Length: 638
Image (cartoon, rainbow, N blue to C red):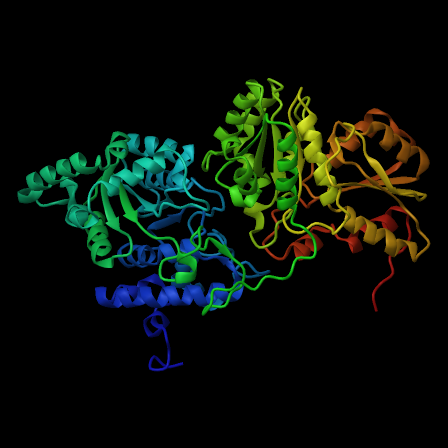
């Protein structure tokens, strides 16, 4: 397509950031318009994270135009906003493979491009990485400037302040761009959000533009230094600008309009030419900028399915069964209606965890602590210590960030915090960074912890009730992303007997003991095996800790072989079963046992179905494992 016919003539000329060096500032403004339209068009076809990327289009253009990537390291916090960056860094031809099998990752990824110096799917890591790159540069590493772009929501994570403290102490040249859009995934919470708002709400933005271009006297020629000093003191008096960050050792510059290239470009050029130490640039942006259907959404169009560009209407498949997340929320509401001590805690994910519904019903009993999983866990421990019944709802992948607090603040003290673990197992398009692979391993090894996994949405209802009834120790229950199995739902939850599983189907020779929602695939495998005259016993463990030892010994006594299946890494449920059987001397007599777990690898993004096929945990692979264990040849496909 020629430039005359193309709707993106400038973008068509930019294959790598080096192609931007010859563009005028006016052309860079036009490039931003085209980049925004290309981002919208691409995500409309793939789905994914839209609003965050639209909010940093001008920042992306300015950073790549001024700095010399990939030698200079642009480090995007989380990576939700990296789609425009990917388009400018040689991946435009693949941008419509975002989050698809064998396609581009939805986050930055080191193995994908030299322009992704640091991968991320979790927040608040970028400044630490930038401090590391800058320290390596001081030690002689062949790397240029380090630039971290972090949102105001991610700044609520304590790790960001640990990094600011260290970076300010080291005094190495580096840049932090605070992308302040008053929005993370959900509306921001906490004193930091209020502080940032004061930085610009108490003074008109237009009065600060000139200050933003050169407020720090270090960057200005000698004759202007005194004037800049006075302007900066005036800014502090007007808006307390930069006080917190400067106390941490960073030169504060801003606020600056993050969508105004006339401000951004000269500012970044001045900083690149003159900065000698750590600098924080406070940029104000709007999530979903330039696309009205994203801007008008409460979350700024954070995540979206495929959509119609003209109308913004998302193309979602009709639901045939309730979402696990909604089942959890509604179950928790029912329990809380009966027990006023029940409270909900989330770490900046009220929508994703379902606690938004709970909060609408019980606003005073709902706490969103920001992107601060460590605090969420210990805060919950404090609530439990005071006699309340906290349900700490955090995705499996994010709960990893609070593990020391689970051990030290909850488990050792036997405080009855209830962990509601969403996104258990493989999660599809978000890939390895968001997979819930390890929670069973890192929770079930803790003394006195009750660890459950729901096989379907009805079981989840009962496990919420079970957790509510446990008052003498911590507990956890896990459930996957997406729709349930379409089973009949109970009107209310009934607490389960702790450490007791259930027999689903009676059979002979081989028993399959499932833990979690792979049970549906086990039942499909059982049906296929019956065609060959093999009728396995199928059981649902329900609990990894405490194990149902009587059930396990019963399965061993009545069968020739046992297979355990779980949607988690090695070291989880199957390992606990194996340890128990070994201690009982079962293997001394040649009993056959196999454990099916996720492979010892990080599985790349694809559909959840494809990922489980790759992991060998679908019905076909389960049936094949049974035949292998019974020494029956697997029929080859024609």
